[in-house]
Structure formats: C-alpha cells, structure tokens
Image 1 (cartoon, rainbow, N blue to C red):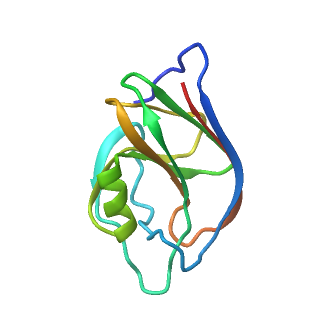
Image 2 (cartoon, rainbow, N blue to C red; image 1 turned 180 degrees about the vertical axis):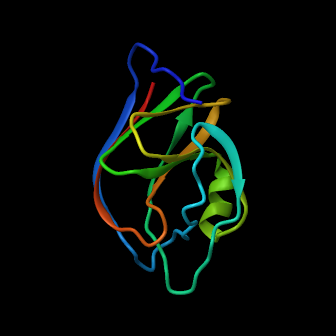
Image 3 (cartoon, helix red, strand yellow; image 1 turned 60 degrees about the vertical axis):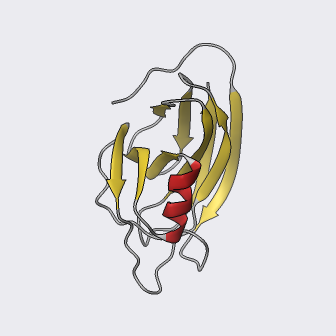
Length: 137
C-alpha cells in the first residue's frame, strides 16, 4: 500500500553512493521480497562470501510522517526501528515497513514517533552506481 505525499516542508537526505559486493556490514537477503508498503518479517540469507553494502539513514520521525524515496534503480527500501536494524545488520530476523520497489517514489508512512532507520539495499549479488534521495515529510 502506497501513501500519498503530504504537502509542506520536510527533512531531505540526498546522496550518490556506490553499492557493491563488499565485505561490509550488510547481509544479502535475496529476491524474495516483492511486497511494498506493508510490514514483512524475513530471515536474511547469509551466503558465504557474498555481501552487499547498503545505504543507511537514521533520524527521529513523528507519527504520520511519510518517508519518500527516489532512486535511480529498483531497490529494497526498508524502514526499521533501532532494534530491528541491529538484528538486520547481524543477519537475524527483523520486521520492517517497505519492501522491493520497482517504481518511484516509494512512500512509507511512519507508524509511530521515535528514531527510525531507512535502508536502501540492492538485491543480493547486484551492484550499481545509485542516485537517491530520502525525504521525510
């Protein structure tokens, strides 16, 4: 379920990032994620020797805010609280809002106030030069 953008100002995070197969902190989680804008639980795949970097942004958001992501590539857009992000980085089970997006903007409603982590991650084994923006409205 996609949520419409809200009018008004917001905080904007933009960047150009090279996501690639590296030995960095993110584990692959495969191509099984096809839903968008819903809560999904999953167990990331931990395949020996295959790692993927991810783009991460953490900030305080309020109930009713909408995270709007623009991206130059099809990508997993995940919104997680701190506990679930920590589990995600360890390769454990986590719950998130969002999923795999093929078209943009990706709009995800923030379910309650607090610190939230926005993660942009390419599917396992993919690499690309990514142009993206993350806007919290």
